[in-house]
Length: 388
Image (cartoon, rainbow, N blue to C red):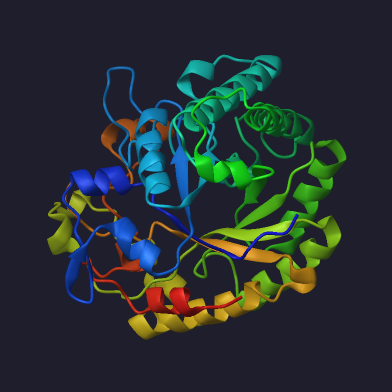
């Protein structure tokens, strides 16, 4: 099976941003964010799903409130606008990444067998929910940034037996739902999916420049795991090494595992100017930018509008020329997350759940593909015109 080079965006905070009044402009004209993305040749939208991002007393965890219902509404909207969907299942009630893989509250006391069943049941439930509501699912991510495992402590590295048990359960559920789709037993499947022979499964790690990490993880998983189609990588230049390191890692794992590769998360700053006046938060409530000056010094390109453009040009040229044609695209992470009052990466309730001191605030606005006032940046034109 061949696939086109994916030009993707993660728009998981879309509903929250709209609710908070975010507006977007292209060449000075206000437009719907999805209309803008379509005009710049974006084809697939990545949407995260958290199990239950609310406290026991009903307080929101924020950061998009991506429970199944909220993310479904986003997915229906982007399907209607003509995009494919990468469904990103975190198997947590909030952010899951290498530093935190908290079990959903409802699974907190489960052992390995119960967790395996819970992953299978939840994945199958989500597949049915989204397919029955006409979402154009082209890919499914079983877990998010699994470098250190998932569903801790049972599924924490180096317990690859349990990691494989949990990931395999998710893969089997995706396959089951896809078999039902192809057999016609799921009603409401969107017409676009009639041409899709298979929903692709992605396994996603962070630190895309770390070849030793990918070799250890996938050497262990492939001995124990179900088959899958895509290896997803995160690559942030201020955390994950040089573009050459990313390039070398992708070439190596393309040969080693024979899978297609997609950079499932990438971003680059376009400014180091503060956005305090846009958030309207007190200093003690603000997270500030993710990229501190000490980190920025390590980046090959400056955090300027031109620097963002040049970085993405170099990045796209590299990932589209991976050995054996295995570089199959990218997803820019939260390109529309501009600073508006009411939209931040966490709330007091979610900080308690993930045991983080905070504070809250946006943290990401200087890495969007729109400036602080919502104007499209030149990098979008680069993405539109790029031919793999």
